Image 1 (tube, helix red, strand yellow):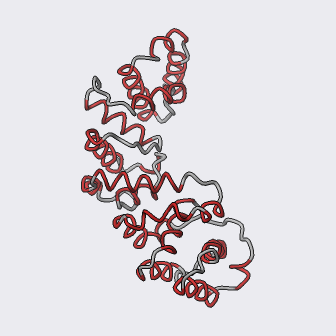
Image 2 (tube, rainbow, N blue to C red):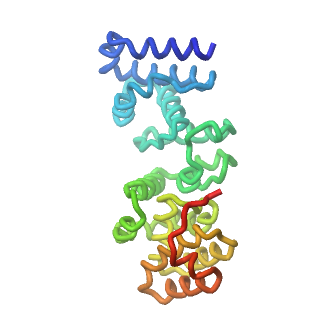
Image 3 (spheres, helix red, strand yellow):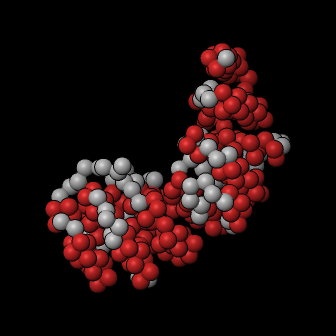
Length: 269
């Protein structure tokens, strides 16, 4: 049955007449996206509408969606989240977006979605898939600032370039919720990724002793050699303050010098 449904979707959405008719049909684009993903999700395959029409879907989702029912806006957010897409909703749609996030978490199937645990934590303060109702406490302006931080982190492809642009991260020091989540959760999501890199930049730029304490606590957790090297590579570029110099000195006192000074291959298991 799964193969038959998949074949049916491939045939429908690959039809040139269908493609010509759907291009400017905003309501139809969202309706087909939802129907395709619902059927695919229930039968464990990738919906075939999104791969061919993701640009059109993205375009509709960036509009006011005036003629699209709220239920379909919610479902569009819901299935886009399952594809790992974190939307930047209009404020008037924010409650529908939060409902979609909460339902994704309540599904208790985050292993079968592309939703990223780090993104969930930074945006909503939720670790794993617990307490889905907590998303409703997020304020629109706070969410937009948190999303802006994630988008800035993802704009880089190398750690050295991200560190060179550290001044671009300075405004986020004023985002209290973000800074608290990073201080309290960096050990939860610490890894070889650019959200970790952006978080390290903020903790090293921050003059607040709580930020240094979170790093010191992190390096007290029996880190592996590649993690130690990652920390050291950031510490070395932020030696303008006594507090940061002390962090590097503390790292050298706890781990072998070669772990810090020599490049370590990734081994995040």
